[in-house]
Image (cartoon, rainbow, N blue to C red; front, side, top):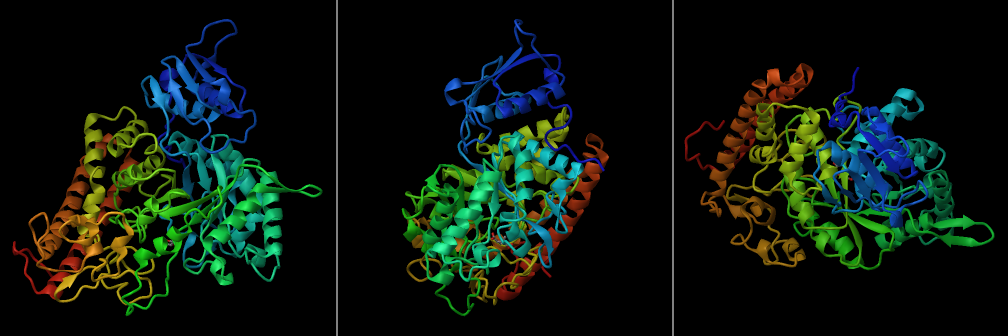
Length: 640
Ligand code: GCW
C-alpha cells in the first residue's frame, strides 16, 4: 500500500538538484533542512567555495535549544540566493516556499500559532469510532488501543505527516480528541511516553505537540475525591503531573480542554468559573516543582480552553434559551480574568461548524483575553469528505476578521489519500497556508501545483471549477439561508429536516405553514443579535440574505434583497445546487486521462455519491417546504 504523497510528491525540490548549499546554523531544524536538500539531490558546498543556496538564521533570534516557543522566528526572507530566517523554524518554511517557487521577498504568518486538533481516540469509541467525526479511516497514532508509533512503519507515517503539516505552515498539533475518555485520559500520565514519541517526530519539523486532557483527571487517574480547581490537592496533582510531562517533553505545547460541554466534566460541578478552571491548569503547567524551592515559574506551555459551552439538554419548548448565545454569555463576562498563558478557543460561528454562520461574537468581545479561532477541516456538516467542499473561502473570510491564533480540527486519518476524499487534502493544506496567504484561490493554485506537478492547464481549470465554489454549491442544496442543521441526528450526514426539531440540542428551524427561521432579534426574539457591536442583524432590511433565517423568522413570501421570495429561493437554489453537482461529476469524468487512475476513480466514486446525496437533499427540502407552505414553484418544476 503506497501512501499518497499529497502536496509533497517525490519531485518536490527537484529543480534544486545539483545545487550546492550552505546552512549557517547548527540547530536541529537546520539538520532537517539539510536532510531535505540531500534528498533532493543537492550537496553541501565545499569549504571555501561559494554556495548556490544559503540558509541562515538571523543571529539575534537564533535559539540554542530544540525547544521553540510558538511563532518564534517563523518568518523569513527569500533573498534570491537562499533563505534568511528569523529563527530556525523559518528555515523550514523558507525551504518549502522555495518548493512553491516563491519570489524573493519577506514572508510572515498572520497567526502565530497555527494548530491542527486531532479528535483521535486511543480506544475505538463504541459510537464515535477511532476518530470522532473522522471520515478518513482510523487514526495514524492509535489503532484499537495500541500505539502505532511503536512500529517503524507507524513512526514513519507520523514523520511523513509532520512533514506535510510543516509544508502547509502548521506549527502545533493536539494529538487526541477533546472528548477525553478513560483510556485517553492516561496519555497525561502512564501513557505519556506515547505523546513524547509523537512529539519527537513533530519537533523535527518545527511542530509543537499539545494534549487534550480531562478536567476530572485527578479523580479518574489520581484517586482524589474531587477535581475542584481551588482545592490544593487538585492543584498539587496537576502541578506534579504537568511537571513530569514537561520534563519528558521539553517543548510541550500545553493542554486543550473541553469543559462543561456535552457531558465533559468541568469547573461548574464545583461552583467554579471557567476562568478559575483554566487558570488552575495554566498555573500547573508553568510551575516546575523543585522540592526545596517551591514553584519556579517559566514561560512556555499554554492552556487552550474551549468556549464551546452550551446546554445540550435544552427543552425545545423553551423559546428563551438560545444555543447561539451560549458561548458569549459564558465567556464575555470573563474577559480579562484569564491567565496570560490561557487561550480561549472559539468556534468560528456561534453554533457548530455549519456551512453558513455569522462570525462568533465572542471573537470580538474579549479584547483582554488571548483567543484562538477554531475551524473544522473534518467535514462533519459539509459532506463528510464524500462531497467536494473546499472550505478555504469561508475560512479566509473568518480569518480576515480576527487575529491571534488559529486551530483547525483535522480531516486526516490512515487512509492512503490521508483525507478520504483526495480533494479534501486541499482543506488541510489551506488550514495552515491561509495564515501566510489569505487568498483561498491562490492557496488552491499552490496546492494544485504541488500535488499535480506539471498539471496540464485543462486539469488545473477542472479542479478550480470543481472546488472554487464547491462550498456555495453545498450550501445551495442543503439547509437554506443560514438556518443550519436539517441533518440526520447522530451521524450528521444527509437530510432530515425535522431531525433535530424536537430534540434537546438547541438547533431548531421553527418552520410552520407560514414561515421559517429563528427569531434572534432584540425586539421579539432571543436577542442574540445584540451580542454584536453593530445592529445589522436586527432587521431583515440590513441582514444579509444568506443569514436571514439564522436571525429572523419570516414568511415564505418574504422578498429577499435578491428580489426573489424565500420559498422561491429555496426551490431555485436546491434545483441549481443538485444540477451543479451533476456537472461536477461529468466534468471530473472528462479528466480521466489527466490524473492517476486510482485517484481519479476514488474521486469519481465520491462524486457519484455526492450526486445521489444532493438529489436527496434537493427532493426532501423542496418537498418539505412545498408541503408546509402550499406555494408552488414559479417555474413548475417537479416537486415530490
Ligand atoms: O460538532 C460537535 C460534534 C462533536 C464534537 C463537538 C465539539 C468533539 O458533533 O462530535 O465533539 O462538536 O466540538 O466538541
